[in-house]
Length: 302
Image (cartoon, rainbow, N blue to C red):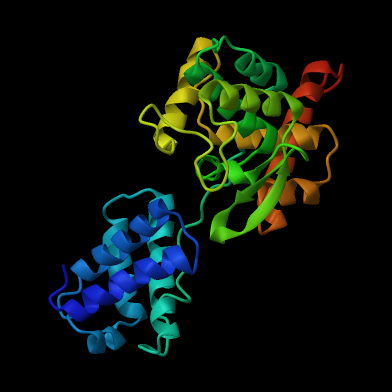
């Protein structure tokens, strides 16, 4: 807690700004606000809004130096820098400071990992698992089918409402990062699985903002439950340990390998930048090289 209520109130305003104006998830909001709190915990002299103007790039660099000594992961450091940059940008917008001391600070470079994905055979084995005919099993199948058919993010899935599904047109409305909406097609197997779940659960006639998927408590399903569902059926099918995000990677990789246009994939995934989507071209090239090395008579020399 800050020494004065005015700075504490300012941080609360920042949290609301992240949720309401930037459209960040509750998880990201908590992480960013926590990162800013951690920074101010090291700034003993900053107890009023007026003292915020005294923070400069040297102050921030000293703080980052202390972070590097704690051997945090590169991704954590990058997030903390992003949180501070966002907070001071927020102060600029409010006219509290003139310059953002974090604007020109660069974080460590993150390695561009090739996205992990399942082969088509592995994915089909997973989706053809024995889910049973009980409501919970039908729900689980619908969740996995929907993750693969659309490539949506985990929190986009858990945030789906009944009104977001257009059963006539076979599409759904997805609210992505920054509250940006997009339409995504639903394949027939996924639509059939979804209808089976909704009919068994008695939710088929529900409309409006009622959650599409619910947990055992009858409330909106949470991301952790979906992670457990994915892990359960992956183990059941003997598939490597995966997360819900692997469905998104597999969706994009399989579309690309079948000749889908990169910009179409970008639109379906809800990526702002094409460069983000281009990660999957690396996956496809890697797959082609693997096949080439295995099949071509002179791939590895004589």
